Length: 96
Image (spheres, rainbow, N blue to C red):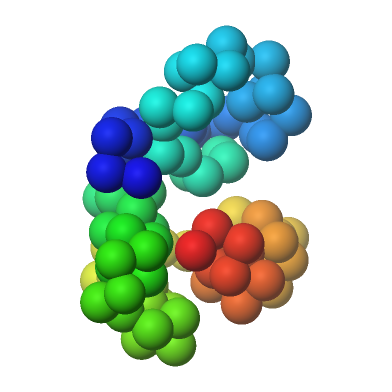
């Protein structure tokens, strides 16, 4: 996890990432369709906290929600509450 590089992936779906060289995918930390660096890095930091044992999942989720609010995140119209919405529990748990 520590060796990964944060990659904003604006416009790239999970299917698009499937076409990226496996070595690059392995070295990258990304979340589909998210091009805002601070948000991707925020998820990465909380994921690393869970891996290191410094954050519980509940604390990481709380921090992610605060980070999304602080960065002004708004879901794309029509995606609210779906897996495409970073505010949804399902998406947050998938990423973390």
